[in-house]
Length: 573
Figure (spheres, helix red, strand yellow):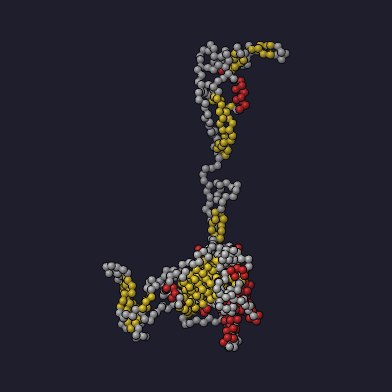
């Protein structure tokens, strides 16, 4: 029995609760399972016990913490630090909350070897799949490129990478110069009176440039192309000047025999210059119109009156010092070539302007009506009036100089040139349009030498010739470009080059003359043993036309076991 104070402040004796035992000395009740368990919980405990349990005392504090196991589909994540472990003499462990532990510690002050340690608290959260997310391959429509983007803020990095489709940059860009009207590489249109100016140039290394010149206000234009140490002049009436010589359009391709850095050729009524080394080309009509094309590899390296080629219209009017001009005049003046006299702008007289306007208005009518769907007709007429008026003015001035009376239809050539320009531009955009009747309707006959045919839109870079006949990719198709003029009929090629006295042009472009009259080895492979795979033999003799000169009479080709003999038709046998 244990003494206990009653509500009336009297002392009464009461037994311990069920499953509890009284400790007489201290008069406290302890649990039955704690009596004689090897640990003394009161002074009378562990006395006269039938079996003594030796306590196991942990001498090393245990600080091992465990990560809990979560149900399927969940994973443990760290929440806070705050659970305490209680370690007893027997080495058994129990997890208690902070409050419960303190009450227990207060109730058992007599215990020894108590150790508490703090371990992290975990919580179970839904687990993300560890299998990599399958994202579709980024794809864009034809003509567009995939451009990958960075993740926007707040978007999980485990999401598929965002991307967008951007227009594929063209392989080339075009600058059109028509009189005083310019369409730049990046698409800006403006007017400026040119005189001695740089149309476009290598703005990084200065290796090449294209210049436009005219020697007086009313004089015609001509182009000067500078590439490394070479200077090529594309002059009026389809003439080419290179070095100390002048070449007609038909002979211009001979320049390509001298160097492999560039080519010059006449394609229809157009002079075509192609820089093989730097990747640009020029089409010149011998009057006042030029088309300059640059490959995309020249992006951000080209500037001049054709604009700064960057695919950005905002910096198109970049001046040589890198600043952006505020006006067209400031921009044009900045590209003037020093050392030349300036040309005073000249306005076409009103009478000629009216004639030019009537001519250009024809582009709205008849067979050209369908072209108005694909061409900005107002822009064309604006450019057409300027170039046609300049043409009329030149015709009139030439008549005054020569003191001749103008013929009734003296403006026909200017009218036909204007309409041809429109027809060509239309066919470049829409090749399927049938414009075959325009020449008949507007009295613009196309005259060609015998054996040639006129084409308003020839789309190859050159005409097949003896020189290009065996080339694998000779005269490729040029997209969005039309050459007009006289061409060989389909299936025929230009005449091969013939020489009088035996002139030889070696594979390395060395030119020399040899007048021997015998059979000679023109070419063969090098075989020390003399057993050659091929040989080309040339038989030279007295020319039939010139008895004092030597000509090649026959060619013999030996190839393996094959034998081919070519000879002039005048020879017998």
